[in-house]
Length: 154
Image (cartoon, rainbow, N blue to C red; front, side, top):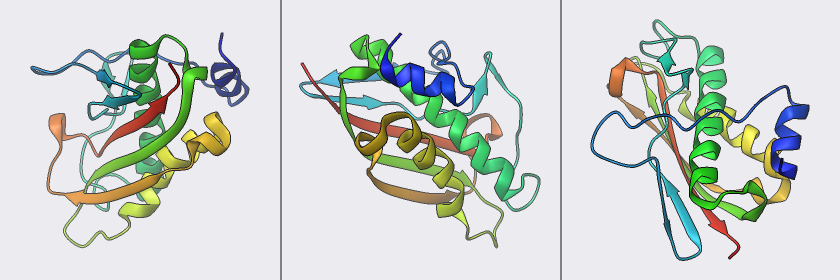
């Protein structure tokens, strides 16, 4: 097990299996020194446990936890491309999408769930640039979706 996975275990988390694609794409692609993940939903054991809009059916606190799940799924997708998360040099960019009620403006706080998990798991290498975007709807009526881009060692 990698040092990153040891840190996750210390947080009570286990790296899941890679979430199967819902359409015509792959979970991650490596290009040179970078790995790009597809958007990751908060799937656990192949199921989406919570649906709806943040600020309506889903609380911001619930959504923040779901963003953590998305980030964990993104790390699994990265591992599938490189074999060992200890090869991650740094997380370069995180893009988070929040299915939002019309008056909800707390997208950055929701996506902090993903950012904080990456920092806890990767330390300084987890510090990244980020976008947090409110959208009308996400696949399967998921409340949150997260994609990451990481630089990796050869």
